[in-house]
Image (cartoon, rainbow over all chains, first blue to last red):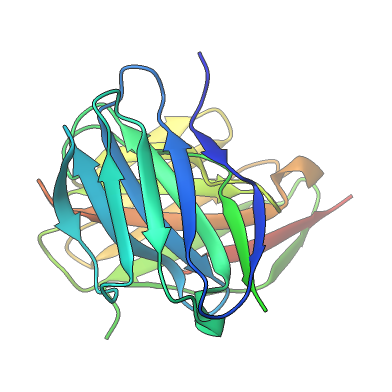
Length: 115
Length: 110
């Protein structure tokens, strides 16, 4: 069974640009969550989507947005990139919404570097 | 105060040692507790998943939850060089997001 797939694996952008990251969950999983991971802050929750609806949102500015498609694939967009957005962006999927009796399974992330 | 606190280490032990990794938390409503292992340049991999208090064992790994002390632990017996990684604890309440610790870096020396 294929795991969570994130593309691209690496991305280099400059300040002010925008970026779109993609996530394909494990087959059958309908919940997708996005996290930002940095050395100092650890994993910070961005948002969760379930059945194409945003279910939970973390404390990030509106420059960070996402969406989920009918096949459960999800995209995350960051506009007006800042140097501080350099991080590993992780996607995790689960069968049902988080906080229940189903754990999350992670992809290997997209490493975003802002110059 | 962070929801979840985890000592970042680094922790260095000889091969064969017993490793103890710990997290404390502040939200008494947390019911689901997880441990993830993350190798360099990879995503977190689920190791253990427990509900409420008690112990859970899986091979060389044992997870303990003490809700009265708001304290969870992961024990690794007979540690191997392949266990060298960053270990993340995570927890959640019913219907809500997961909260993660910042991770403990572990090196097992052959």
